[in-house]
Length: 190
Length: 325
View (cartoon, rainbow over the protein chains, first blue to last red):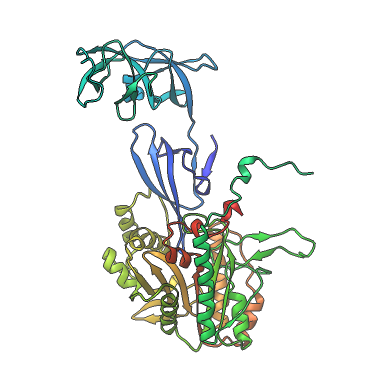
């Protein structure tokens, strides 16, 4: 893997720091007019999600991390692993619960998701910002109540529970914002 | 015919600075010239491409090495100090220059590799008298504002509870490791001081602050005095809300001491794996002829425009910053 000098650090660059794959968030050049130059860098640890700050002497370098973001198709889960397929190579990858994380409640078979591979193994899975899922269970809808507030829990086909307006019925397909876990609209009416 | 550039390359043809920022910039250029005209300080211009660069181990020049005129590579000037000292030694009297300077590798929120530097020299003034004049200029440009002077030692005592002149390298390193994530960073004594100053002290400097009496090891081209067994450089820096704005010296005039500093700089450059820089023989000859006792200061003009416009990035006050130049 190539190595990168502090002056090549850009947001999004993937590097190894203390043996952990990280994504650079911010790189600030700090230099007194008459003194040592530094780069004050913020990085996200791609394994833990934790944000690190680290100061380097300008000109030092870090090894690049073998990290790739690939859009894959979600296949199925056997309860222990979640299986994904790269639609270009047809290669299948299995991700454990730690890698799938919160994304697992939004995974729908045959739908695309972004899988981050580190040394060829899934490190994390990112759902699209919006997904459309069917409601498998909710209290009966209140007909005609389309304007008033008020909500009720609804269980989706993936097992996720979201709050929906009272007029939504079982069997309907709704659009959910995966970043907040909130109902957005009936599918097709966004 | 050369191929047309990719579209992405030309979409940034527009200026980075707003029309209002460019107008403020023009006003400040006029204000600076007015300030010095009133005080009978002569505006001068010296070469941007010179046969010698500075020996300063912390400053790297951009070098021009192609062209029929060039018998040897020439250095884009990192500051006009050598040429201006030659003018002073030739009897110019007080002089200022408002021009471009270039520094390789310096790009970021507060840096652009090509920038505008205001540099001036005052024969007969010591560094404390020049500090007062810098404050006058800033008041003239930015409106009245209070300023305070604080010594480098006092600053470190106030912010970090440490004596920067006497603390051991280990103490300074431990202090930095306590406050910052630095991994296995290895630095010499002045490196740790620079790290603590830039990361732990500068961000907390409010208002207009002048720091003076730097460690002797950070004298650069300033005179050094012994004070209570400590070598103190007659050097100062101005900060506005933590932004470093100007660096000044009671100028070294002794050619033998200057030659020793050139040699020490080059020894340091060698130890860091940097190429050595030939000392400028014309500067040494001018010092031999006699540099009048004087103080001098260099002020980052673009940063002054940042302060005047409230900009958070240097790019906001440059028509075409490095990436669009």
